[in-house]
Length: 273
Image 1 (cartoon, rainbow, N blue to C red):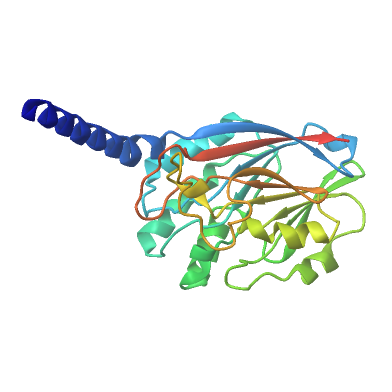
Image 2 (image 1 turned 90 degrees about the horizontal axis):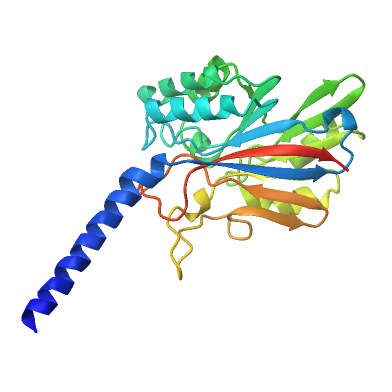
C-alpha cells in the first residue's frame, strides 16, 4: 500500500513538473495564426478580400525577447497583409532595453500601413519614450484619431481611441473626424469599450486585446481577466450590429505562463456585404 501511495505521489509530482515546463517554456512561444472572415457593413467592393493582421500585447522585454518578436514579424509577413494593426501594450515597463526591442516592428511589411494604439501598460509610466519608439519603427499611432485607406474612390476608415483604463479615450473626437460614409473599424485596447463603440452605430468591427485570453484556462477556471475585459475576454462576439474581436495577445504578465491559451496572430479577411 505504501509503495502504491509513493508511486502515485511521484507520478503527480512528475505531472506537475511537466505541466509547469509546458506552461512556462512551450506554449508561450507556440503562437497560433487564426483566420477569420468578417462581413463588414458599408464595405465597398473595392476592399472585398482586404486582409488585416492583428497582433496585440507584445509586452516586449518582459517575457518576450527579440527572437520571439522576430518570429512573430515573420509569421505576420507570411500572411501578406494589406494592413497590420497592433492593439496596445507594446511594453510592460519602459527601460531602454525593452523599448529598443520595438525596432523589430520596422520589419513588418504590410501593403499599406502598420497602425497601432496604446494600452494601459504603455501609458502607465512615462509615455513619451513609448511614442518615440513606435514612431521610430515607422508605425502610425492613433490616439483618438482616424486613418483613412483609399481604393480608387472607395474608403475604409481605421479609428483608434486612447487607453480606456486610464480614461484617455475620447470617442467624441473620433466621431468628429470620421467621415459619414465608408466602412469603419475601431481599435480599442480594452474590449469592453465595445458597448460604447457599438452604440454609435458607425462601426462594423472593433479589434481589442488586453485580456491575454486569461493566459491560463482550465476546465473550471478561465484565467485572470483584467478590468474592462470581463464581458468580451476572448475571441469573437456580436455587440449590437457590430462584431467585437478580442485577440489573446503575444506576450504575458506574471506568472509568465500560458496553458490552453496560446499566443495569437489574427488574420481578418474583410467581406463586402
